Amino acid sequence: MAAVMLQGCGSDVGKSVLVAGLCRLFTNRGYVVRPFKPQNMSNNAAVTADGGEIGRAQALQAVACRTPPTVDMNPVLLKPQSDVGAQLVVHGKMAGNWQARAYQQKKPDLLPAVMESYERLRTQSDLVIVEGAGSPAEINLRQGDIANMGFARAAQVPVILIGDIDRGHVIAALAGAHAVLPAEDRAMINAFMINKFRGDPRLFDDGLTEIENRTGWTNLGMVPWLAAAARLPAEDGVILETARPRTAQKRIKVMALMFSRIANFDDFDALAAEPNVDFAFLPPGRALPGDVDLVILPGSKATLADLTFMRAQGWDVDVAAHVRRGGRVLGICGGFQMLGRQVSDPNGMEGPPETIPGLGLLDIDTLLTGEKVLRPVTGRSARQSAEMEGYEMHVGQTTGTALKRPLLVLDPDTPEGAVSADGRVAGTYVHGLFTRASFRSAFLREFGVASNGLEQTAIVDEALDEIADALAKCVDIDAVARIAKLQSAKQLAV
Image 1: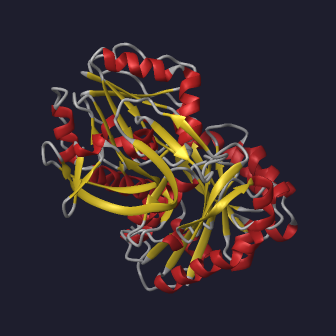
Image 2: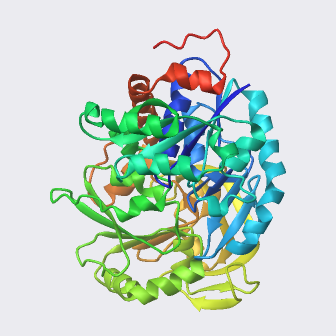
Image 3: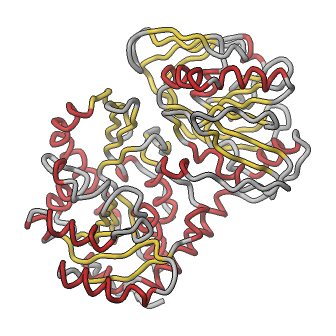
């Protein structure tokens, strides 16, 4: 079976989008394609049908392949809980919390699990498109590596190296990678691509020649800035550092608090795309504006730490004042837990055992437990019976009288979430609430505004096709197929 791996000269060079685009391109040409990322680090995760979790990017790439996501597509997932520690997920299940230094020693033990997943995907497909993590030029992390060249050499998968011209110094990045890589790793790289180019590509002809002369690698093409990528769910928190443009004519203002361990922030993509919604993330150090209609407390990988972080920003005071003015609040997952009277962690799931007071906006209490709930769900809103779908991904059991006023009713007939007696504060464990147009439309009607009525899945699907079409025009796809050793009678020409 054929395989090719896209590695990058750094994080956020566009590997995830390029893999998704190539997955859709080869799928559209009749191949059975599967995405694979040996090791991912992200707090944006997706739930698989069999109750596991993988990186959000691999779930998107599965959509690009028109196949359900499985835990084999991302066998090792790290979910950061602090600057030096993360929760480890192997084959979709929690495998403990690890400090960075200890994990570096553990990595080689995870290679068999990685290879097991990769081999299963190979037997299911004509082509596996693999995504690296970070950069192979981080040679200080090379020992025991399973994310880049350690995997590529173990599986004998040829590599295409991606350079990001938008951030600058792309010649130095590619030539520098060639210079610092050990000879055996360097030999795995067959070609390179330049990503995120703006303007006339002929202006970089001399730059391409320099890269080719200094590396000996084949140039596969220059990918322009892909506007359609903005309509895809983002996995990397770098996107949060870019402020969304605010438009005066939008009719309601929604702000989501940017927690230090914010998780699954793509929950709000569909809401942000609504023409009558002015959506933005509120960054640390900024006060909550007084004219906001809805404040969202998003998911968090570390509820207790982010409760403390929230208070350090003064956001607890801001949210309380917002509610007194008649504003509305929605908490999702960790944000839901924060809305209650207290959150208790007696077993030290997130750190030292402790109990922290919540915001006291809902009559609930949460006890963090060792069992993680991972499941896709469908249902309807309790008040308007608007259809919804999403997924649960949380640790903790929540109790209290507010649960008698549920926000949702999950299939077949299970109350979920809570709403305050005055209806202004609500919370739920369900991610992906706004994906379905029916739920989003009903939700926005409560604010007196109309929805665009678009299904988020259709928006993403259309964007993937646009990206695939763009790659077909600017990348030597025949060369990609040859590098991958794709043997098939299927026609590669568009």
